[in-house]
Length: 301
Image (cartoon, rainbow, N blue to C red; front, side, top):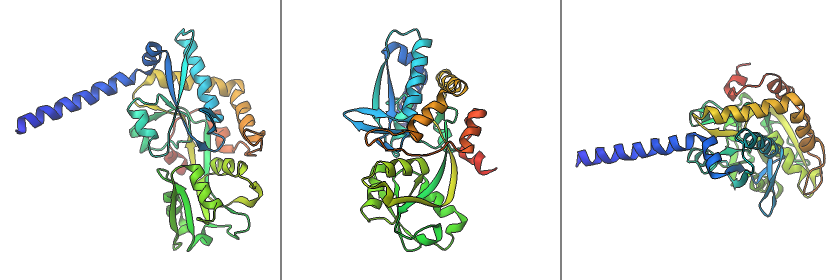
């Protein structure tokens, strides 16, 4: 019995390794299939969101589309079919790991824990986690969240970040969870939450697309600084290099700055409102010296 269980376990482990190895050569997979699957988000601010009818747009969608066009050229392919797979904060890493998604173009923080499971391209965006509230709430700081309901999105790290903040010592609040960022913002908008803690760009994007953007504001201390990057399967250096090279070329040519202006400083669909988010000094620094350092390295500064 023990022997059969051991053989079975070995067989399962071998199958998992084989599957991992098969998925590790993403360039070959793209070349052989003529297609690639891009992981996208429904409501990640101006980084990645849906317009409905299977159409996805945003800053990171543009960056990934450019990278895939460069890869298509590198592989000498006349045509490349890009398929879109909506992902959530909860399932994005498993879907990259199991090969369902080849390249995830959403709003994922590059951190040391996640680097054990997946790889990240060089950083394209350095985010600041903030707090969104209703403009008439009177809330302007972490201390005023005591006794309040704070919304965040399932599968994200924002509330943990808030709890670890030294200014949150002695502040007790109740967590309420949205299944995605749009759902979390709805908790704030409908009054079921007093605040929504999340990446500033996601907060700004959801506010800009709300019925009355003036009813909301982003307040309080910066809770953390996090590098946001495009995510890929681990241990696939050839694919990572291809994506990194494309991103570096976008930065060098000024196309990255143009993409930022398009999505964060100009009116965007569907409501044709501006997010109004300037390029931060941290993002400029990441562009000046492209790297895939995790957020823990930023915390050491």
